[in-house]
Length: 527
Image 1: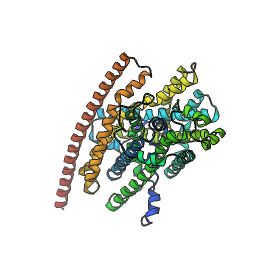
Image 2 (image 1 turned 90 degrees about the vertical axis):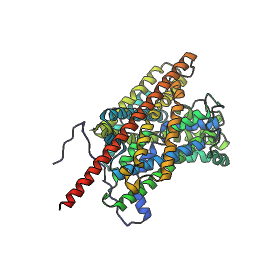
Image 3 (image 1 turned 180 degrees about the horizontal axis):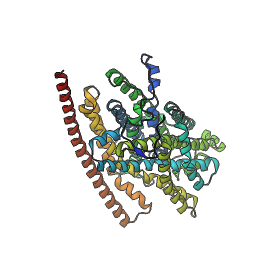
Image 4 (image 1 turned 45 degrees about the vertical axis):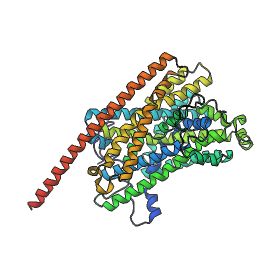
């Protein structure tokens, strides 16, 4: 008899229990067939690296600084590959997702704080998806924005349908949507005939990459770099990957089977994140090569759509003739809609992982999606209604500012996923001698974590200033800086609390395992 589930119930079992270990992988089937069998989780993770929140930062960075910030996209992608590999390895070897592993070593109170922080980060991502999907519906079908925002709530029905078709099919749908996005931007960039020498030169960082001396349209290279980093490396992806890496059936008593799974999960992740790198690079190249320099005055999705159908903003005659047909702008809106729908699936799974892991509560995926989406819709609706009596440009700018400002929560939450992940995958106690991070992974990991945390904290004053609008008075600037310094102190204090509890938790775990080993030896000796 099938067990009946309550809407909200206690959960302290395997991560994403409904899909955990459900995908069987045959042995001895050759490298390429094995890679195909393990491919899929990486695609769901890669979605977070090309969601609507990335688009305006990359395109605006290209418009303002040409190819200078290409190196930032490359570095962000390499750091993402490193962290996502560690997340997948943690899930596969420990049989716990990142949230479960943190909670097993920390107190209930800290678990609740970290859960709320991560939920805010997921909601911030969801706000970008609501805005992207609603604008795509408005641009493609001329649906009024308020109605389009409400329609985004019903993507919960799509998720409900997908839960019935099996996890392997969900992975295939996500890969197809990624290919749609990639092909749209490949087509648009191919028409623009970019300066490929400049593109490859931009992949090498210089002293100008993080400069604060040069300002274009109120943005310095450092601001642009922080925007790209903040929109690229997302905390909830680390929780998600540590969970969905466990969807493949593994014999944990066979170390070679575990090693094979770690190897192919890493390959899958790196291949899919390479696609994400190309999408983000193409977005920046669009900003440089598709449009004339400085032609995009409105970096919002509305402005980009209009610019792609305006022959006067195009960089060459071929683009102008294609833009006249409306194909470029329509394809852009289609890619935007595809990106939003992809993020719907991954955002919901991430939310379920952190809720089950940190506070041991579970709800059906459709209900989880409905709650998150309704909460995310509220600020978007308020923004649309407050600007309904103003000009279209004011409405566009307000929505764009809401999307960009909401990303500040990602900067808060990122250190609290990166640092525990690195500490646990460095640990022989957790990972064993074979699977703990090698010395070079450890060094690269710590450099990445310290650099990302430092950059996010350094950019905090600018992010807080964004909430005060474009015309900031001296008094508002001082207030914004005060708020930022308080937030920086809070982040550092919470990080210290997390590190102390993780250290104590590891000690408790070591003592418990030593006692178990001693008890096993005593039992064996008494036989």
